[in-house]
Length: 130
Image (cartoon, rainbow, N blue to C red):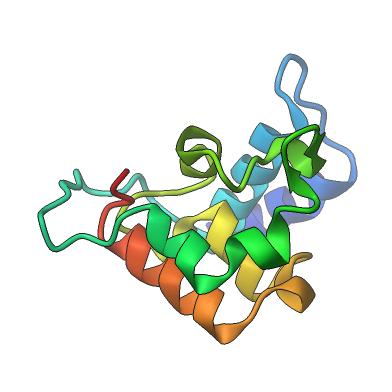
């Protein structure tokens, strides 16, 4: 079982084809398989759930918007748009969220900081409220 999973992980990034699947979705598939994230349990926001605006307050607008908003949507992400960010989130599971993985240990980590990381973690764990 583990050998089959290791072979699959070696194949996915290098040679496998995902006809009809866009690049963002391909990355989500690979990260999900790599981290062995299961489908998240149903998640419901409450009055205490952090709102999407907490990301901007933490600094995402300053640190990320020059490349991820308006006419410049690198990676197709608009950091100022709830739906755009939500598409990269697994509600209730920061560790299984592409957005969180990228800002904490992935390609966006050098542009992030502890305030952004903590706000993203809290927002995602709190079910990614609008």
